Length: 165
Image (cartoon, rainbow, N blue to C red; front, side):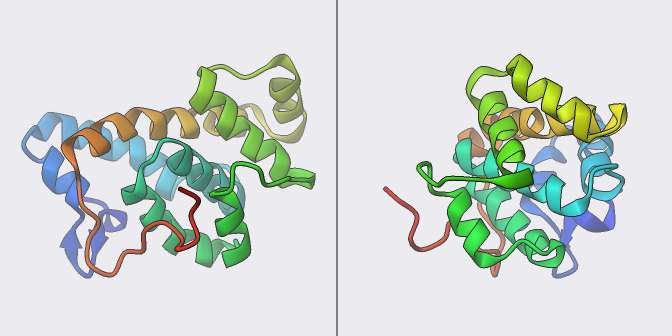
């Protein structure tokens, strides 16, 4: 059984359709992923910024496109989405920390003491765990989605057109 967040135009998304070949894995994956998507303790905008940067950095256009749709509802502007895809973009304020968290987790799978301490001052213990796990989750699923070649559903956006090559 799929949560409503796993549907697009009333049909199951391509990732759960692919995972359905392993029903036990699909059930457990749905619970774990669903926690981040439907029951996250992080503010929606923070969660989506972490997700977009992580999916960009792992080259996972499938999830990046899906989360552009969520980002629009969370108050992330098109300009911020484009900046997420620009490695040389300079970030300031609260967004800088989230971009740094995503980058460190994707690149090294560990946060520096400075980044961890800043996160711990900003979030509760539960939110801190999610902020660390979200980039790690998308790093993990990138290997699956990119290797299998899961295609985006019709109407789901991909990379911004001005994505650097």
